[in-house]
Amino acid sequence: MSYSGAEIWLVIIGLGIGTFLLRFSFLGMIGNRPLPEWVLRYLRYTPVAVLPGLVAPLVIWPAATGGVFDMPRFLAALATVGFGIVTRNNLAGIVGGLAVLYLALFSLG
Figure 1 (tube, rainbow, N blue to C red):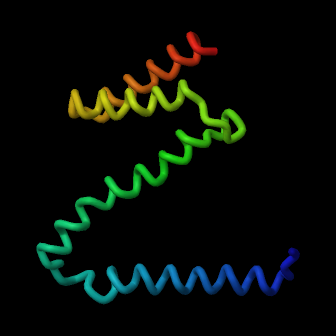
Figure 2 (figure 1 turned 135 degrees about the horizontal axis):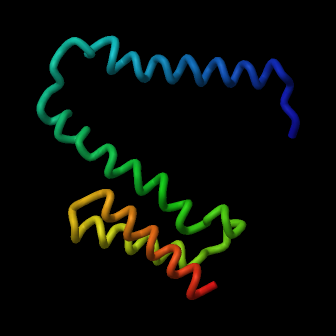
């Protein structure tokens, strides 16, 4: 299905206005007032909720393999989570996952 240039620009402008209004609702309308404690408590979980959603597709359907499940990348993701939980250090988790990825790629092919 082909879209005309006007339809594409209409969608882009509509999404831009929607994004602006969504952000303005937080920053413009309540940006100069302190947020209630219950809102701050829930906002602390935002990174924890967003990161798995960004990383999971890259682990399950990696672009490097054309979307086919790849055991070395899965093992590296598990190792990253494991190192991060055990050491409570982000850098240790990243380096540990990287080491496992390269070892798994070397040993499993």
